[in-house]
Amino acid sequence: MKPDIKICGLTTAEAVDRAVERGAGYIGFIFFPKSPRNIEPDIAGKLADRVRGRAKIVAVTVDADNDDLDEIIALLKPDILQFHGKESPERLLTVKAVTGLPIMKALSIREPDDLKRIAPYIGIADRFLFDAKPPAGSDLPGGNGVTFDWRLLRTLDAGVDYMLSGGLNKDNIADALRETGARGIDVSSGVESAPGVKDLNKMDEFFAAVEDASIREPASGSAA
Image (cartoon, helix red, strand yellow):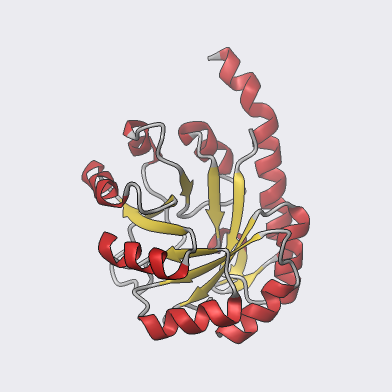
């Protein structure tokens, strides 16, 4: 089955259009000044208007305060709020109650114990996003182009809905889907020619690789 696809860190009309044309069900805009993919809420709102109703609009923040969230929500009008910082379950529960918006909580994974951090967010987060822990020296919680050991996700309860992220690209997406069976995938740096610069050809190649993996999955599964 073809997974939900989210293209994150979009900053141009061309990339937004191509992502949705190729089948992205989610497009992400990043509001974090340290990120090379950072975008102003008003610009993101105009880009989102190009495809509103055709894909879910995701606002990605990192420990944003109430004022920043209010501005992002007012100008972007997102369908989903994604939190990629150290936000507590209590913080997310409050935001969810006030905004009425679905919440995606990103968690960084490197070792088995990292998955234990899911428990307090069960029933609060509508979906999780599992990313690799950032390499030493990185100021970015995501978008670092590194993977984690996908085998760790074998221990997850089948009821945990998540998007797989972290270093995904056209060359490894088939292995990632085969190993995890993820119902959603998130890619950013894997479709870029430079940090923050989406490459339309790489986007095309990624979507083609996902399509190919989705077609081949039933055959490989039955053989097993």
